[in-house]
Image (tube, rainbow, N blue to C red; front, side):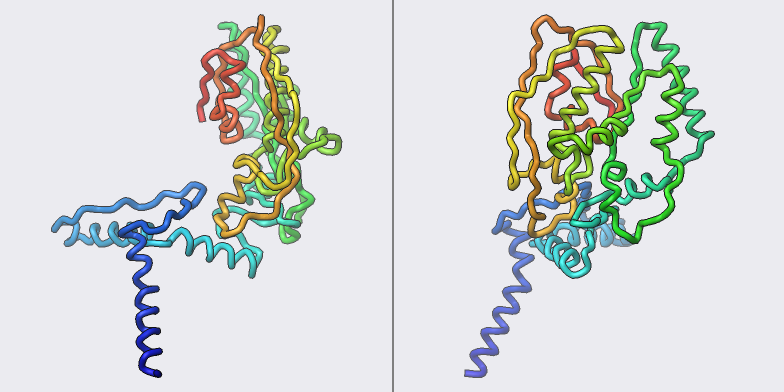
Length: 318
């Protein structure tokens, strides 16, 4: 009986060791891909030159590390254990705050002014914007600078205690002050969100997202439309919210984008969020030509085609 058990254990161990190879070769089980900015190594072709200078071995090793069977599940298990045991996020730059509010560390540093580039550097950029604005005016083109909100400014009360420090001048505060005293059209969405925070019925930022919420995105885009109308003295299509679906369980990707980047086995507990259903009135309205230069905050607006309903052939430079 003892030998039978030993043989059985040996077969079981060998099977477990072979499982990654079997999965990699035959793709027996469908496994969800990891989320976030992940770049996997490509396979390489054998050559004597590559073998002699060791580039083949290095590339092959990197490829096998990135592609062995069940790798994604093992990474999720490792990340889940790190969260359970150490309350740590195994994702680049992600910080877990109080009550599981998730942050990108760069936003925390920005809130305290750690990344302040200096007043002279900002003065130089403002002068460049003034020059561009002057040239645009000659061609009847309007330049609008939009200061986006960020989660660090919106939810500083949930920062981990280890980040508590003295707050100094920030890039956002300096830009807002200097743009306000210039002749450049400016929409300060950061200030708008902070004013809306105590009175907004629904979250403008979520616990597990880094960008504005789905609801906050619509509020921000509505302000952009109104600013364009005022600046150009035109009547753009109207964004009319018909109803709002409030849900606790189903969270859309935009509202869980940082949670997704953590690549855990189990999602965080839900949060009550609002998902508006809206209509767009285009009758008798003007759709101007618009070029948007932005970071990822505008990505969801562009990818969902929302701006195409308001602008004539919109362009987005990311």
